Length: 353
Image (cartoon, rainbow, N blue to C red; front, side):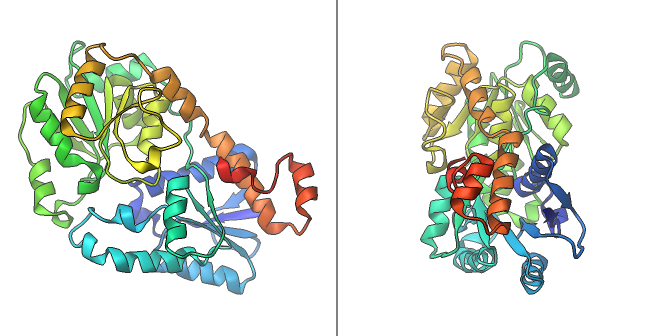
């Protein structure tokens, strides 16, 4: 069995969650010993596609002509396309039709959560859809004090400064306006947002938010994974105000590095992250403001160990084992009973991973 991890178009979105997801898939296959390649050849059995660009469609169609199997990762939905770039709300219905066409090219469609699976099923997609986390590399995202010190030294934060971090593109859906508003309401804390988007592509309200000048508000732009790991280690609170997600890889990273997390209460976290058990959730600015103070001043119980345990459930190793099971299901013609005995799992056990 050999998997072609198609990476066409990833250069355009390497800074996004999809780019990270591709890296996680690669690590998962390496972790479980599944043979894979990044280059086209005639000896692959399954092509795994992550993007919805025309080249990815061509690749999936080519695989069908060659009688190969296609695993299509559904990272995007119409819901998370909205409130992103200029005109995104207008084009959202067309985007929905396009991604439906793309995903239906897969013999199997994989999406990160039960929530995104339900959205896709609501589009009328008839192909089998499974939910499987994008995963988290617990070996890389491993907390240490020295990394935190490097972060604080680089950005000139003192040992007594309370630092609030967020990560994402400069788009409305990510909650950037609320982040800036909270920086104004909480001048005693430092707010720093990592990520980048060409401001020519976003609405004026988002451009104004990013260009807001406050002494405690910082927009350093995009940083490497190593620098981001240091930032998590050196921060006191991860504030993730996204209004729509299919999973939220950066939240998994924060939980893995045992940083307190305050998130917006949205449907994707239902059945996974519980309020005041692994994370703190809020819906309004006033709630975020009060909860941030309570967490940073030690008036709210620490949930970092519980959050870390939740991240561990979605480790790269576990994701890799599940992926391997999905591949065998595609390639083998054995009965469900035979395959279940050989792998010690039922045919549908991976759907709840």
